[in-house]
Structure formats: structure tokens, C-alpha cells
Length: 357
Ligand code: 13P
Image (cartoon, rainbow, N blue to C red; front, side, top):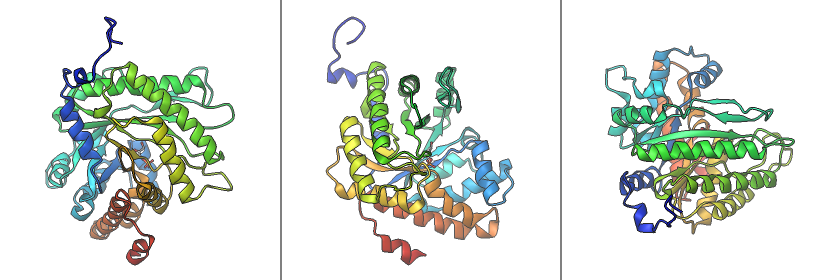
């Protein structure tokens, strides 16, 4: 109900201060058939860990060169509808002085921005976290819009373990995500709503299914309470999947079937698109899961990828910080982007991986 006690009608939703039709257009473009999102928004701390693994020093120039390499990979960017950037990157210029956001736009892709400010321990909930960054978010969003961002990302993390997640962690995190989403829409920016249930533990797929269902149910309740228009969001969930330390991990068919069932039970058809995180799955696993879900078909939303590690792991290795490796790394990136683009259509085949190897 609205504050004066009346129910809002469907048509009211399209007559808000923000332009919902435009938000919807962006959300549709972000999840357009055969395309997906490149999550290149690692914080400086996280990209340092990735660079350490390939023995590259984590300097501002190296971070720029690495990301410029991907954004200029024309063949790869054909399959990339949008790029999530970290604050540093959205203001950066390429080596030749071109703003990186202009390179992304020229490649036909939409610039986006990670706006959460990481996690802090959740009081009285040992082992659980709350994502922070709501203070001054409205002002930051205006600046990011002026710098070409048309969508944003906020990630909440929910861990599975003995006695967790608590109802407190689910409530506070989904509440914060909904507050962020409402602020984004008011700033004419499409919010990627990412309540990530981690796959770090030894739990089985059914426990993941149960926890993710609870999180998504709470999430859509919060979005409704905070008047977020579902036509103008993109959901970025985890799949229903076994924990990495589980000895008997569920296979591709089971992951696909259970994830589709879970999402159909939780995500209204008004949501234009769902773009999965990869969350620590292997590159090929992440592709195979998405492909199998799209092969099941008959889905009310576009179903695609918003992968970080599963898109970047291979090109990062191929690049290894050397300018003479840029062309080879771009080819590797293009391959993974194409494989995931095919998976977004349900047209991927495993032998396409072998042929490229
Ligand atoms: P991963 O695909 O590596 O999980 O990263 C996606 C992301 O944006 C996490 O917030």
C-alpha cells in the first residue's frame, strides 16, 4: 500500500519521477540474448591477489593496462553487453589518453559501476558480514551517471555454515540491497541486485537451494517494500550448487535443473534479466551450467552471465603483465566471452572448447 493507504496500480509504476521505460531498456540490453556482463570491478585488494598469482606488480598503470587489454578486445566485446568497473577504472584513461569508458561504449557495451564499499562484521553475528556504502550513495550515483555509468552493482555475501546464515544477516543484507536499488533507480541507474550465497563450505546442493530460496524470497519482499520497480533491475544470483569442499558435488544437469526451479519459485517474471556470478566455479563449469539452463528453456527472464573470475582467469594468465602477450590474451578472452555468449543462448557444445585448445 502507498502511504495514504491506497494500492498502486500497474500503470502508476510507469509514471514515476524516474524514467522506468528507459531503465527497462538498459536492463534488457544488459541481458540481451547471446550477451552477458564482464565483472571487472575487483577492488584494489582483490586485483592484487589476482596479480600476485601471475607475478605482476599491482600498480595503477598495470591495473589500467590489464583492463584496457580486455576493453579493446573487439572480438570478445561482441559478447559483452556491459562492463562493471571499479571506482578507479571509471575515471581512468587508456595509454593513448582515451577515457576507458569511451572504449567500452565504442565497443557497443554499457559502462557500469560497483558502488558498495565492501563488507564489515555484522554485530552479534559471528562469522557474518554486512555490506556497507549507503551513506552519500545518492551523491556518488549522480557523479557516476555523469561519467556514463548506466547501471551499478552492490554485492551482499551470505555464508553457509553451522548455524548460519542467521535471519539477522539475511534481513540486514537484503534490506541494504533494496535501499541501494531504490537510490539507483531514483538516479536513473539500473541496479544489479547481488545477494551472493557463497559456495565456500562443504554443504550439499540442497542446503544451498534452501538458503538461496530464503535469501531471494526476503530480497523480493524488501524490493517491494522499498518500491523498487522490478522492470528496472537485473538480478545477479548464485546458482544452486554444492559447496566447493563437498566430497560429492552435484553434476551439471542437477545444478541446472535445481537452479531453474529455485529461480522460478522466487523471481517474478517482471524482472527483465538474471545474470549469474561465477563464484569460484571453474571456467568451463560456469559455461556448462548456464548453457544447460538455457537448453531447458521456457524461462520468463533472459538468463545470462555476469562473470568475473570465470571470464578473466584464462586471459589474466595469458597476459601475465607483458605487452607482447596482449594479442594472445585478447584471443583467450574472446574465446571465453564467445563460449559464454553461446551458453546464454543454450548453443554451447563442449567440443568447441577442445577445438580452441
Ligand atoms: P565472480 O564471477 O568471480 O564470482 O565475480 C562476479 C562478481 O561480480 C562478484 O561480485
